[in-house]
Image (cartoon, rainbow, N blue to C red):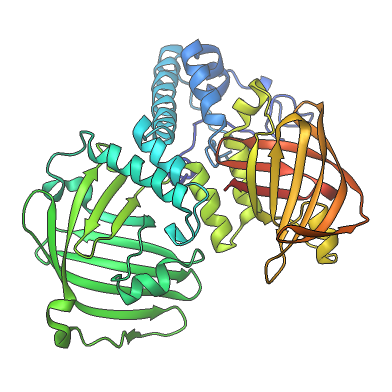
Length: 444
């Protein structure tokens, strides 16, 4: 994090040339003052240590090592001064760590239920099945019945940029919503600024960091404690490769009432992290300011940017729970949404090795691979799995067929490999399988 990158702990050097265990000409024993970091380690209480252990699971959170110096300052500090300095350092470090840990747990139980319902839904609701939509609607209604911020439109928590995580798509949805919202590789935001001289609500489609974005702006006003009135008045594309904005070709002034609307905030979390809104066209929106780790990983997969790095970060964040308890292969239908496969074999070889399509985990050690081919044709292969070690399973597949409705053409194929579970919950699974390939599955 930036606040850690810009901060240094005085006297702490983790550079090999100045570490006490190093064999070199710079001998720390010559100094009459112990390093503050060694004092800090001695003075930390059990609570401090637990906090730092929690910090170790937060990716990017670290002390920046200072560069070694051949002429260290010779200023002598009294033992009491050193003690006071270390005490302040300990309190500052612990408070910053606790702040990062609290951010990771900034969602209530009911809010987490909504996030769980959203995991695995692609296209921000476009590809959701009826059971998935029902689960989201139940979670939304439960939050709307909870005690959120009582007057959201007058609260400072509603101000700022919100990321759109889910929306329903009625036939009356706007052209922007129909065209861009369902594309996972785009990020969609809504900016709300009501406490200014020029109150506005803006919808933003960010195509990528390299291409640019489309921003559609509306003049806004507050009608009551929940409702915002708006009227779109301008829009433009901002491309990274152009020094000017390109107007969006919509004559808002000629649209009249079609350019007007309202937006009700039916739930705003006390933390200011989740907002649920319903629009005048019957659309429901779920928006977030802070996303939880699984959502960040899925967002990286959708954009295709630095996915391996995002997986490593996620695994590091969850490493503590994985060590403490064994991960089980959970039953259900699991859709593969990403793999690290680089060398491509024939599609039927990929299908037989679980490199595409769905994995269906059944009771009593039964497993099935299912891949849609075209025109109703499917590739199906069944087999067995059994536990072989800590978080590992051996898989043997031996019954393949090309299936069309109730009919199937057998295919003589056999394959076997091991699966190592790196993370799994009721909604998402990360594993390592055939040829050490990494997989991310979501439960469908």
